[in-house]
Image 1 (cartoon, rainbow, N blue to C red):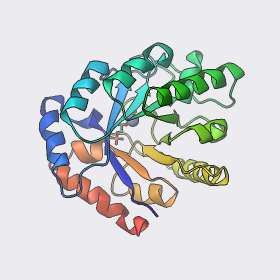
Image 2 (image 1 turned 90 degrees about the horizontal axis):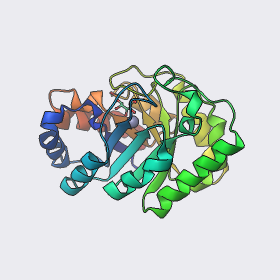
Image 3 (image 1 turned 120 degrees about the vertical axis):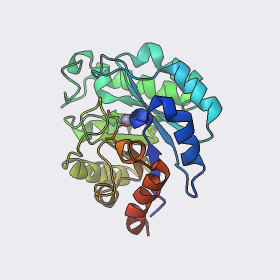
Image 4 (image 1 turned 135 degrees about the vertical axis):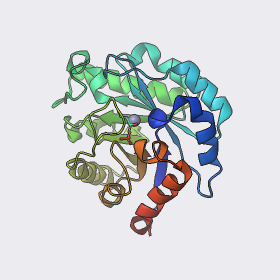
Length: 247
Ligand code: DX5
Ligand code: ZN
């Protein structure tokens, strides 16, 4: 099995210490593979975080690839901002193609079937991301059917499986995410796709080994790294927790 990648989520970092904490992680013996950036617009999810100017500033300052997770209503008009800001991986949500499916009460809403219009929008976003020089990813909420991913597997670099309802860091891992990971991994293998399978939400030294055993090869971790007294040590502990699964 190839190396499991770790993407610390800066959502859990203290913004006033961010530069110091990222520098510390980049100086680690085994530094982070990516930095995970949660973009929330206060509509798609009931939380508001960072936007393009912040990402552009971060891009100039760090050498680690930026993994940008868009939890926004209208990728149509905003994708270019994130491409120009320097996202290396850029992920959109399947649910964003259904404006009525989420909103401040509905970050947990799931989709059961793909409409022709939604598929068209998603195809357009993924093509736009690739044409803009980033690697496209697609995410889905815990309530959405994993088979919705099937038509896109050939055009993706990454599937981001939400293992909490999107919007906030520090939530508990939803156990049925393991079965969802395994289903997507099996489907990707059957399609001959070698995409990255990223798990996001509630990842720590207890949940990471099971996620890797079920097919995840990119681990997002916010609370488990940035909310710890020593983020560098927390990163090393997380790597150690999945070392057996990698061997
Ligand atoms: C939640 C975000 C996550 C979040 C994970 O909507 O997508 O990336 O930062 O945080 P933890 O690892 O604390 O669950
Ligand atoms: Zn995320």
